[in-house]
Length: 54
Length: 341
Image (cartoon, rainbow over all chains, first blue to last red):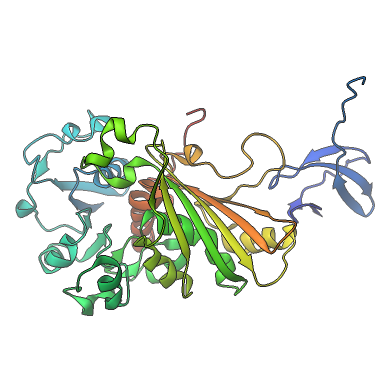
């Protein structure tokens, strides 16, 4: 179990999770990124930024 | 099977209660009453129940003894006739306001009348299982909460019971079925359609229940009627006595509601359903609760949504009934709602 950095929910992290993997918090729906696997740490995934070419 | 009857079953609340109880696995609905429709099939008042039952309305004078009697009568009738009803059933679930308040003075202040049976007020359990679950199994008398009170109390209680709320301002947007099935000038279609009408900016009767159950001196409450048939959205502005982080609020709500079968925490960072919405709980017994902190002040906005006829009335009554009788609390209340609707 790893804590969601936004809402504090306990999030299941698969044993074979890898750094950079994306997942969704089941409580607040925030898209999360695996920052470290040992110790397991989650961060908010960066939002996709769009380049409108201006 | 528990044999139940419903007194006053031709109104919206009575019809909704009948809809739920007809499909309850541990209930047999024996009689339903309506003076106006006595002798008629119930689908005359509740067309959604056509073919679901062959029950006809009876007069209340024809009520026979049963295990549980639900009272869905206009305010004032339960208190006036309570002895008559208690003689018919060992357990009463009253959906009116007649036995919600503990303090008899509250009836004078909020309902403009002396309570004729003040000695019975303490015998009734306020029928919100999230608040009084432990008192329900032994209860013979239950008074279900008002719909606006239910939505407001469930939103605010986690903060009041921890003494975190200095004050609260609550704005409720309410659907037209709150007004019952009796027509009036205000419900005439050209007047009601499209309305966003301040119904009770101050002085709503349900404040008496909120204050009682939240243990506070006052709640600043306003109600607005909007273009919606079912549903309540309560926007509660809580002015906190101390700063809470987003995680703190999540923790508080989880402590109170994670194990509750009918309270869901709804707060999403993205998507179109980020906070509770009445139409997503229409027909269900859910109370969805969400929140947002104001980053520039001590204001915490707690938002709740219910179906006024279900969690705010009939569903709450069935939930309390389930706890009273040791049924699974969700029995007969499993409907998850519709989407889209």
